[in-house]
Image 1 (tube, rainbow, N blue to C red):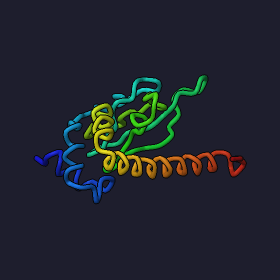
Image 2 (cartoon, rainbow, N blue to C red):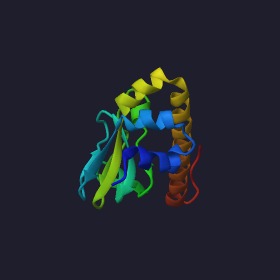
Image 3 (cartoon, rainbow, N blue to C red):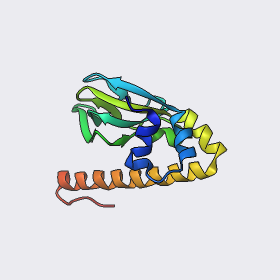
Image 4 (cartoon, rainbow, N blue to C red):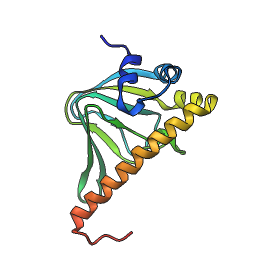
Length: 155
């Protein structure tokens, strides 16, 4: 069985991070399992975790009145999901639901925010990595909207 520290150190999202920072992050982590159709988080709830998906698949969705839940994006093995823990007021903006048995490492956002306050170098590195991730996700959503609306979008 692999240790959390080893799994996190080998994850591309944390590539190049100093071992002391990996150790800090590991102290905030735990293994979690989500059954099919179980929610990782719900829109509007307090956001105190983010997840490294080790195995499985989740769907990010939002609820549209008169339409029901609408899929926005999918996260699979190797992906990182959840950034709302990082930005006040620390509330989820979407739902995330396992579409199959999913194993992940959950990182406690409150714990990590405290460690980032103590070690500004770690804070900078994580903010930089999450900013890149958020920009990629925003661009993917923009392309999805472009496909849905056939190029009739405006900035």
